[in-house]
Image (cartoon, rainbow, N blue to C red):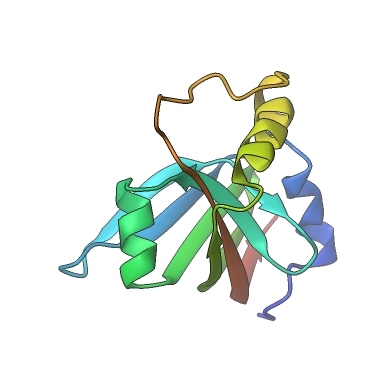
Length: 132
């Protein structure tokens, strides 16, 4: 399928739909983590903390895959395969607060740990597959 997010599935990024993010461990085995996700019209975005396993994995190998299941219809989903093309700390604290508002209805991300450095990852979609 195409590399762009199909218009019919962009609504998943407005819902409280978790993405299951697959990254690659140093030995090539997959590692999967549920993440909050966002879309800026060009990139799929997720936010994490520096030093976590997914952070280490994408810095070493930027190839990732995501599966986003519609919370209103589990038979409707969007799969995205792509490359992390930008990793930045700029605006990451503000972005995680935006995600906390979307997913939890809170103005501030409640799980921040002392000394934690938030990071934004931008994924360029290269392949998409849909169901439903």
